[in-house]
Each structure stands twice: as structure tokens, then as C-alpha cells.
Length: 178
Image: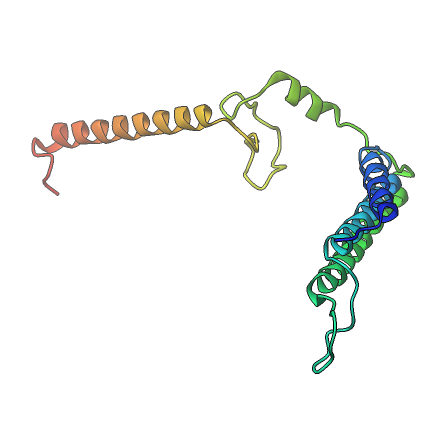
């Protein structure tokens, strides 16, 4: 494989600058970083595809180019275009609503992240602001919290069944009579 050193260097610079811009808080810079990373990926695919050759037509002699990397690059271009259009719509909407291009930290999200809340420790929320009702639960919880909740629910279920059985025995003397 004879990859041009200049193409490899350009690709590396595009990746480096693109990742740097993706880590910024400005939505416009994130968009530019995404475009640079997309172009660097296209260059990587073309460099890795091997040497150039003739078009792969039936009946031609000689070295032919592989059409698969070219199809990958075209697909990548379409995907990059679609995501870029979506990001531009987000940037436009953000500018129209807040006249700001920077993404700000939400104070409550930072507080929740610092306290290490679990599903069981979440506080009640006033009003019905979620699709899950008035109890807001953490989106991500540890397996221990889920196991503990499942164990408590099982205990409550067994306790309820025992209580119902005792009520039936007290009422009729025969727990299985209807």
C-alpha cells in the first residue's frame, strides 16, 4: 500500500482539530468539529482502500479500484450531512430562544451528580412533570439499588399474601372456602 504521507498527515490534523472542537462548549464549534472528523474519516477510508486503479467495468484489463470503500465514503458523506443538518437546526433553535451558542451546565444536574443519588434516595417532585408520574427516579442506577428494591417488593408481596391468608382464616375458619 502506497499511502501518501501528506494525506496521512492531513488526516491526523483533521482528526486532532475535529476532536478539539468537539470538546468545546460552543455549538457552532461542535458542528465544525463534527464536520472535520467526518472528513478525516473519509480520508482514512480512502487511504486504507489501497492504490487507485481503473473503474471496475466488465471486460477491462489491468488493476481495478475496489468500489466498496467508495460506497462507504458516499454513505459517510450522507450521514455526516444529515447529522450536520440536525446540529444546525439545534444551533438555530438555541440562538432563537436564548441568543446563546454555548451549552451551560444545569445547576440541579450538577448537584445530583455530586451527591451520588440512588433510585431509592430520590426525593418526591411537586407536580406531574415526568411521564412516570409524580415520582422522579434516577435514569441510571446501580445494580445494588435495583436488587434492594426487588427484594423489598418481594417481602411486601409475601407479607401481603400472609395477611390476606390470615384474614381469610379468621373470617371463615377455612382459608380455601369461597
